[in-house]
Image 1 (cartoon, rainbow, N blue to C red):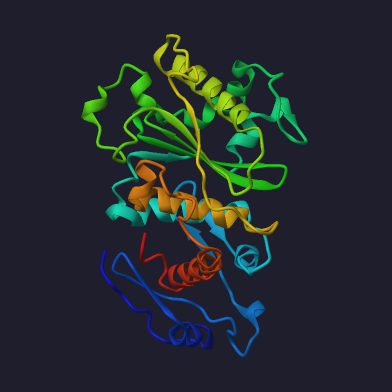
Image 2 (cartoon, rainbow, N blue to C red):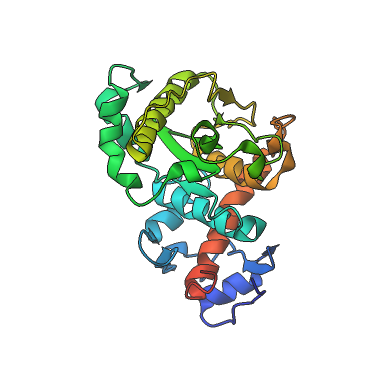
Length: 299
């Protein structure tokens, strides 16, 4: 990926060039200042599709506005930045090894058994799987090293990362993989910025889905038990307000793919600070502005 700098054109672009600069993966991001075009952010015209092609995520004014401090991120921003993470970290090496489910995947999966407080076990795994069976029609998730599942329950975002699901299927031996260091075994990792919810119920739903998906792909039964695919509930930084859960989700995933401490899940309670979360909103805005003005030059 080549370094580039956007030329100054409009007053909006002038504000970007005059703002702080973030350099990441040899790309220069001009982070927008708060006072754009004489302080009127509403005049900013954002119209971006990312990544280009089928399944592109539309980023517009609504997405830009939700990145203001004190607002909750919407699903489009979360999907947008998750895909950017895979394209940017490790020279994009995780793109082919990782599958990201859309933000409404889990909601659709549990729809028949959903309760106001979270997940109900009253719905069978086969019924749940039928809700989303077409979503993997053209992909085999058991050929991936990581499956990223953003989850929103009762208005709260958190993220589940399934590690090495192929180890529990007749695909390849564990020694043939080069995953995240010590995470060379199957696991369901759950990163949540608010402790206390029924995490094992979420893990059980995912195990049930994987069992049904395995049967659909391979025509045979495989039991994904907690012994084969254990749930691991990471001790991670916690939010101190009611709106930053989506930003924490994105920070968890980015740190997972870039920080070696994710390999053992040791000492990650201090992974990042509240200040990092505040800066993340600005960073994402800067990325969106650069991509929009560069006509998707990063794609």
